[in-house]
Length: 105
Image (cartoon, rainbow, N blue to C red; front, side, top):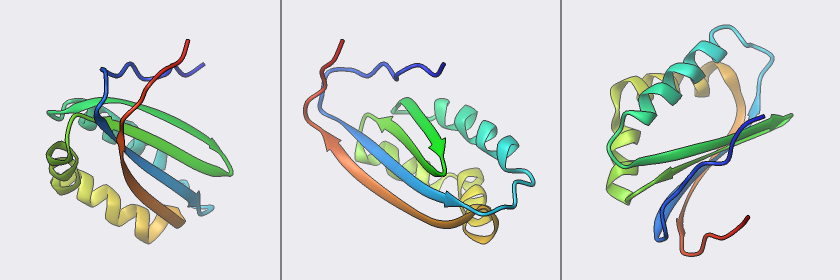
């Protein structure tokens, strides 16, 4: 079972990536693993949560908008983005939100 990301007290930011996949899985799992490992090394990365059942949703958490921008500009991440657009995703949406409240059990 996947665990919930441990995040600090707000405010912080969430990047919400919603996607519909194509039937082409060639290389996808390896790239997803490498991107998670790379993101975890980026300054400002706080954690990630992901689920897929037809519709995929991945939420990554970041300390700042600058950290999100730096991740978006990472050359290896840009390569993965291009492959995703060209090969793995029939549709996707990226949303960036400021987390102002965080509570749970």
